[in-house]
Length: 403
Image (cartoon, rainbow, N blue to C red; front, side, top):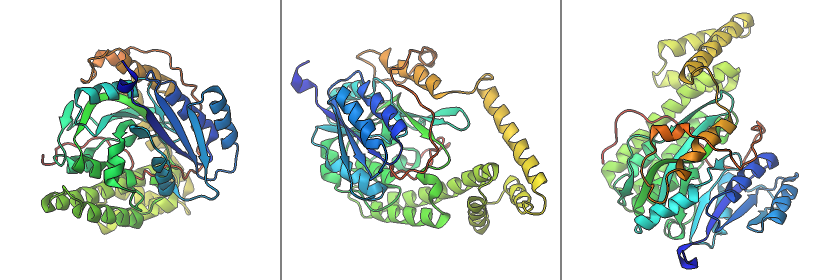
């Protein structure tokens, strides 16, 4: 192909105080089989060895560039600065604790060439829980491969949408949508706006890996903060061109349901971890909503004994952890997944597909593996303010929003 056929791509990586994981993220971009790219690392005033890590990467590969704020601007502003710096025809976002699978960009551009009206490409993301050693692929239903017209699936994008880690945007998306809104779930709002304004092409193939772990921004928001973020998101979409009033009301209902699901998930996870402040907030919210099932009420009862009978609390926590481990072991044939295994398993899917592959992965493809060129390091649990996502990845729900 000529140079005209090989457009440049910018990978925007906002970062804050996670230099080892940042190295892994950058190396996953540099290992792309599509070489015409640059990496824009945007440092939110880390004040640690981040600059040295990036300088070492840049010495080895001139496609890496670095900028650093004089003070921490917050996650949304840091993402905005990264997106503002893009001058290439295409760009994508990558959090510093996530990584790209090797053939993401090659495959995305092949699909866009087949559907030239598409403003962006959406692939699947492997959600890897580094604490449990479990994983799943998001999304699956209700999507299929092919082109989706603008404005037809905005609610679906909110309900069971694609994580932007595995999305490749044309620069026109930034120009038309404008700057990010000042809301913590900026990724959800941006993806919904893009779906309302642009046709996009979908390939149900794994393109990136996102780590899920206790301590991401999702875990720092209270029920009231979620309510405010979802309220603002619903209001912005209700006024956005291409979103009719009926769909806007449906989106508001979706967001409320998601908030309840997030609090239910937090109740379970915080009980096991002993994060009692988070547990009490989730329990209070679910109680006000009338959403305390028998199992949740049991956890609330046990949690109230944590001062008078801590041994009982520890025993119940241990029992529930053991049940969860056995469920995971049965699901995985007795083994717990590692990040190395995730990359080897899913990294081969796109590479084996060939130039015609915008279709779904065959189950047999997932059994083939290949060594990953990415150096994998353990996930740090240090607090991070790099990424703007506040939505916990959720498995696709049964049922479909209206087309």
